[in-house]
Image 1 (cartoon, rainbow, N blue to C red):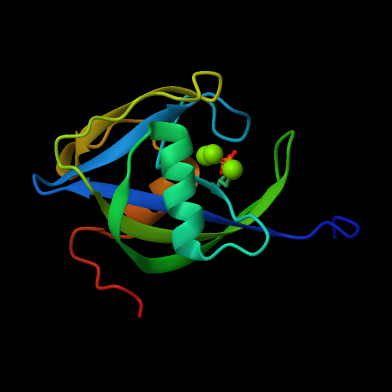
Image 2: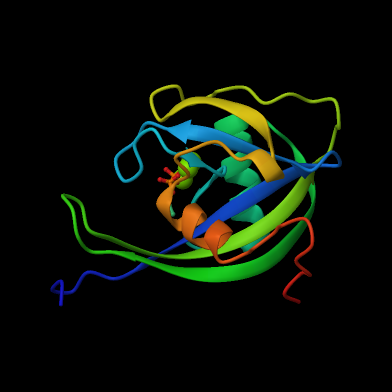
Length: 147
Ligand SMILES: CC(C)CCOP(=O)(O)OP(=O)(O)O
Ligand SMILES: [Mg+2]
Ligand SMILES: [Mg+2]
Ligand SMILES: [Mg+2]
């Protein structure tokens, strides 16, 4: 196996609005160039899932969130390619604290921009782990919280 490398934990948030839309951004960073992904990122030491998800969403999109719920967890192993990665990713759902707030692209070096996309007409390509979940039939609008 990869020496003493350890998997990392990440939290990705389905920020949804009532009209069946979800917030997605086209990634520019390694490990997902130009594919559409959820706001989120690496769990920092000592953080709760909610602290991580809401912090990452704020850092990346400027959005303040409420109603954070953990939906599921995926084991995202990507060993092929130039930068092998292994993330245990918590998938969560939340809504904007202010329904009129629009996202800003606060990390233009890592993202081409954020937009609201209809769940039934998602953009392509989706970021690989998100694509796998969508193909499996996962739907953040109907999934019950995990606990
Ligand atoms: C690749 C992904 C599942 C985990 C890391 O997410 P990320 O690259 O957005 O991480 P940061 O936002 O913390 O930089
Ligand atoms: Mg981040
Ligand atoms: Mg981060
Ligand atoms: Mg991120």
